[in-house]
Length: 159
Image 1 (cartoon, helix red, strand yellow):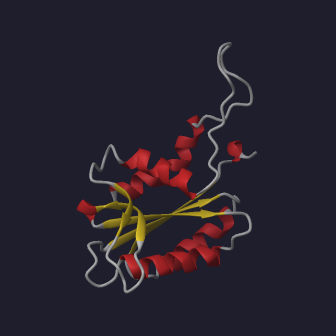
Image 2: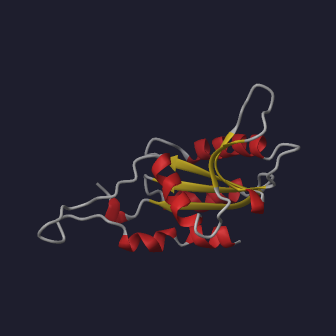
């Protein structure tokens, strides 16, 4: 629940995200902290969660499933929680996110897994918030999904 609460507040935190149209001081440069891909979103999640969960791990290889060696984006072993970050681009359909997350949950939460819960964090770079509720409700039907959080790129971060 704590992880979900922290990640649900991400949109509010973007009020202070650096996105300068002009330099702020005489000796500085205008800065724009772009979020261009999944790794940027993953790094941001790590930054937010590590102070609260010191056992947070990134890019952890989990138990093999036959010839597949699954690697989770973020894990919190003490909570037995996997956090998977997805980056939904303009050309991606919500169905693609659902398919990818369904495949991930089946691997990460397999029998004998050290993890029992899955949190999906979807960064919607295309700002299609009208799709989020339907996508979240669909994903919550999957076994092991503890939470689905989808965040659209804030309007003030548009190029």
